[in-house]
Length: 247
Ligand SMILES: [Fe+2]
Image (cartoon, rainbow, N blue to C red; front, side):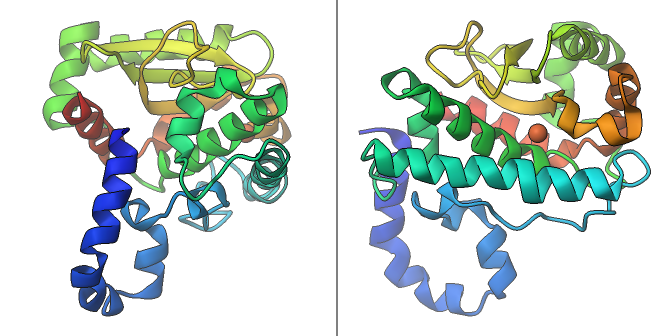
């Protein structure tokens, strides 16, 4: 049994005790807390954690609105269609488990499961006016691996700039808990069993043209440089801790 399945079962068994506390939580807090997402609703597009204009001037409101309501929404819808066609039980299969075993499914499932997973994570990896640098264990690991934060950013920028066509640049935690930078084509993800470089993604950058073309046109490097002003380091630190503790 996978850990995510165990976690869901554990949640089900403890949810009765947690019910009273849950009832006292504001509705949005329940919706935004991924720990309370069931396998089924993690397949649906979640509310954007901020407004379309919140990431201005680095990402413009129109790009955000089209990106969220058209591109990302289409991945979620097409994932639901593929799940139905391929008889995937979304109640019992977590999105992460699907991604990890994606070679068993169709190209449509691969593209749209990846697209949905990647974008849901992408929205959370950004926030308006974040801390300008990581801290704690993640900061130490970055320095140990890359020599400095600037060296890490240079390696990440290189991966993002040189990804030919459409894809993503990633910071991942590998099986041995080391950090690495990599990129994937299209909507692939380092968690996928077909990924060239495998690991748990803790930071990712969408370098599809739909993510930047309205404001930056063909100047992908300008978009990448601007994006660093939005990185939600607290979220990345949380993902790092989860990845390290999972092993
Ligand atoms: Fe995108």
